[in-house]
Length: 308
Picture 1 (cartoon, rainbow, N blue to C red):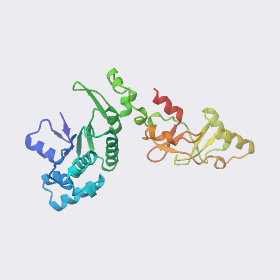
Picture 2: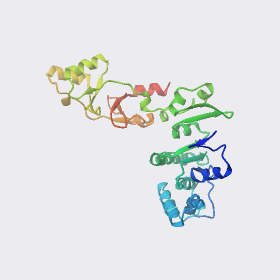
Picture 3: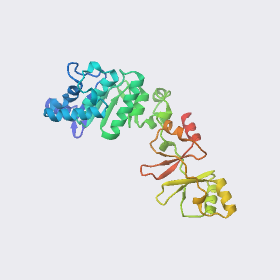
């Protein structure tokens, strides 16, 4: 059974299947599948033409979609004038122009050279962040699957062996087959800060003195502690050394001694993207979508998970 909304497309009649195929599903092919005798914009228009969309409306939609993939200036060229990567962008634009709910991509980037393939992967992620489509992406490249997929299904001999997030697949393989399949994966491109962060208790501004902050720091056996405002947004951090000096000097306002230059990273940041941000003694502050403090990640945490 394969359901799209309430329709089991494996068991509908031909008329219903054509309707679903025309209105709810679109596809990007491995070998581009562009019409060589049509211009780029005519290729992008094609799905809309099949639907019966008026010429002016479909032309405007096609040009807008080409602009989204960076090919607006190539609209009147034939596909033969474009590179392989550009032709695949046309195929992607053609699929997106129909506004279909489900986008099927059958090894869509496997015919591209590695550099262009990586660019297309990044382009797809950028478009998806704006368009929020349901995309089924078929690939033989596990690194590509883990980079693009929110959920990854790995098949062997026609059967699903494991389904999970990229992080679940890498860190908790279902069996030896999955473990072997993912053993060469670059974990820094898969694991995210939200998965490896350490939960630590921050100091809440104006809810205690420097003395109480120092006592808390010693209790949890940390060398530094983040300071957050009443809304739990990080505003700085303090070190044990600065706190100790402040107590000796009789300073009780933590604002006078906290460091305000620090880095925050979202929970969904990949480890490879946060490694360059380490430039001091403090770990990185990990925040949620609302910017609230969730915990910390330091270089030792990352190394421990990359060599696991």
